[in-house]
Length: 305
Image 1 (cartoon, helix red, strand yellow):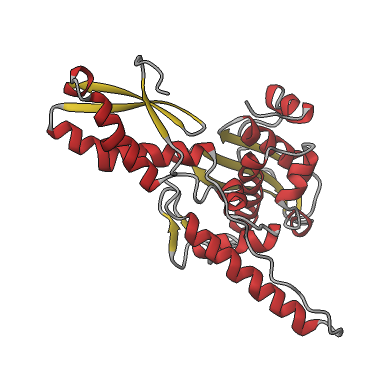
Image 2: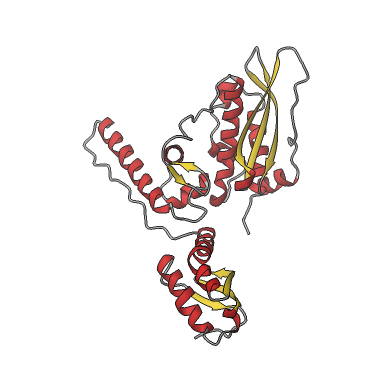
């Protein structure tokens, strides 16, 4: 269970700015909309801005959000922050300001504040007639995370803007690496390269002879979400096809730390060699692909020593 601040919970349970702003034909007023995220990925935000054309000022704002507690609270916070601002000042709002307004967000939910910032930028740039949003290179470059469609350029940007130091940080901010986990090593490499370049640039600009160390990313363990997703991927792609060919099957039941509980089905459930199946076909493969400490247990079977 996530630990939320009272402010987050209040804005989630009592939102005042949900809904749509429609063009009423008012003179000197324009409605602009920015949309980011994807329902398929779990979070989506559509932001509506009511803009005074003469003064380039946001008079009102509304949001439509599909997502979790943090996503809705971040959207509500964003609207409260932008009301009354000029468009140029609104563009200066960062995801950190959104999170600070809420009294903080769980690290794993920081991507919700990033989504708010990007929706604001999209709405303003749409109003100004720019086809792409402010981060026009985000969709270009190598695709790093195929699970969430995150490119190398977007990862580099969020690392620089938020001073991120680990792949887990990147997952928290833009979800990259939060699916199957296969891109985590690439993300570590990008972080290292970005920080090396930043350190070099700082060293060149300084007038002192101080040596600026390059901060190495510490080896990072998978988060629970990443571990479960990777376990499921290995079972689906490498274990189940073998078992199904012999008339059996396996279903992931639960993951508790390094204890993976599975339900053996079909021939595997009644076979006298089911223990060997757990050890050889499942446990050994998961240890090889994920962690040498994994122990696989069959649901309903006696606990092994």
